[in-house]
Structure formats: C-alpha cells, structure tokens
Length: 220
Image (tube, rainbow, N blue to C red; front, top):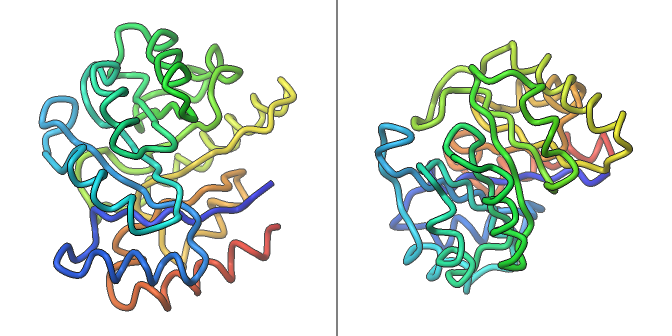
C-alpha cells in the first residue's frame, strides 16, 4: 500500500502558491488536495476550474479534487478539462451516487467518495467496488482549522474492514485536523492518504512536508 501526503492548498499563501506547491513536491508530497466549495453544500466558497487549470501546469503532483458541491455531476467534465486526476464527490450531495461515479469514470478520472462526520461508515459499502478511494471527513466540511473528530478513527477502521472483506485495494483518505501529533493514529486506523492544510502550509511547507513524509514512510 502506498502512503501519500496530500497538502491542501486551501491553507496556502496564494501570493506564494507556486513556490509553496514546489516545496511540497520536492519533499515527497505526491498529491495536491484541491478543495472546491460552492456555498450551498457547505457554507464557504473557495475556488474552481480556472485556478486548477493554472496550477496543474506547474507540478507533476496528482490533482486530488474534492468537490464539496451540490450535484457535482454538473461539473465533472469541466474539472477533467481543467486538469483533475482524481475527483471525489460527497455521498450526501448526490441524487444518484452511482451515476455520478460513472460520470467520473467516463471522463477517464479516478473516483473518490466522501462522507461527512454525521454519515455512518456502512453508507459507503454499496459503492466500494466502484471507487478508488473513500475520503473520511474528520471535521465538518467547509472550514479550515477545526479540531480532529476522534470518532473518525472508528469510521476509518470500519471502512478498511469493509474493503478487506471485499478483497479491495482501496485508498482511504482522511481530511481535517491532522497534524504531526496525531497522524500516526490515523495511519494505524487504516488510512493511507493524508490531507493536511495548515499543518503543511503554516510555517515552512518544505520542512513540514518532509516531517510528515518521514512518518508516512514508517508504515510502508
């Protein structure tokens, strides 16, 4: 299993974004997490296709696009054209989850399915064979800097168990409140893709990425 760091640019200094992205890539971050918020599914509004189209040209990192938007099926083709490699949708935001996942596949992208803290782990079971990754939100989506919800660890364990029971090599990504001080708990619960925003971009992104990667490599 690959252990991957996905720095979230939501926490980056946008006037230095290119340089900060480069520092994370040089120090081992394979993914770049791109949070899209529409002001409807979540209260906040972030950024969209034009920003992705710009930044994906200056890095070889996987563009890990997290759509926190209502009915994301409307935008999948646009994000594919803008440079997405992996698109994650929210189970709670889709009228037809399977149709939305199929749309991601038809666009030639990897598919992820995310659940909010209020959603039980078992809700993803019918879709596990259809996706490459499940994203467990360990904070309430829409705002940075929240405290990690400890109950998320049980949810990670359960999803890993469900995947193992089906013989699936599933990536489990976790997003929210993860720092160097608690990342080992998340990894030991069964996650292998770690989203970190302020923990990477608060301070020196290069050093922070390097410190995270040293821990992730302990689990390979």
